[in-house]
Image (cartoon, rainbow, N blue to C red; front, side, top):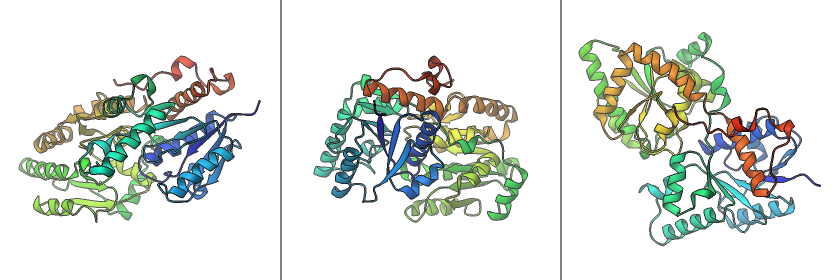
Length: 402
């Protein structure tokens, strides 16, 4: 009997969020499954970021623009030509069209359908909504990255909960290599001139990330610390994408009088980001909406105290390890930052809880559940003993919240 063939759409391999998901799922499948044949559809050059994969993985090039008619046709032709038994679409952007086999789909969030700045309106918006609904209804299984996202899918698209399985994200293994060394810290001191205490934000720079209120809260915090003669050189470092499309941030910095204390560093490599996470006094993430929210978990893996929002999926992800705030209340954010900065007992407690919470999420655990779902869809029950590093009951345990 020929081996099962599963195609995975990897075209968004290098993007924030979705790219992290694709790289880690494929990399972990490579460690756990040497029997199934995997066909990676996308850029062979981008696939090099995953690292070495076993012989049962191969890449088939597809370089056309993702939403072009030519791309739809070519994707379907590749699946048919390679006689794939199942396709995994790892996000809601890549919409399958008339595939010759079943497909499963990962949904990271409902942002494009719920947020006014993202939601399409009029006829095109209605078509987009109905098209997405049909795609989700046609999926053999939907993987939601959090319980929050699962509920959103049910609510927005009326998908039966039995069709949706919660399979959590996890952090990149490069954040699990222990604390930054003295040489790592010296590198950011020399390369980025960071030799002072700082709060850190890392993530996209977009309206739902609530960066404007974070800057306002930092300004209020500086005023409070000045009264108490504490941490006069404290800075706020913002690591994220290009600021050119977000002039409001620069204006907010100037209006708040903290132009000498807020630094925008743009993109930094993961190895350098790890050092920033480790060196930060607090990681601040006051987002208004997250389908999962990886950055707080990445900071927690290094024991850094986290202040984040009490909305969407974030309480589910951070459990009892973070201080939660109402993201629209600037002074509540400020008070939480102040408390975490000056209360050493609280900081020590948060550090220990952070390690425990981050350890609950693992790509191996999540990918084993994805593999089970593949087999259930294909009608092949069970997992070969050689592919089961731990007992099945443990593999099926959800990461959960403390």
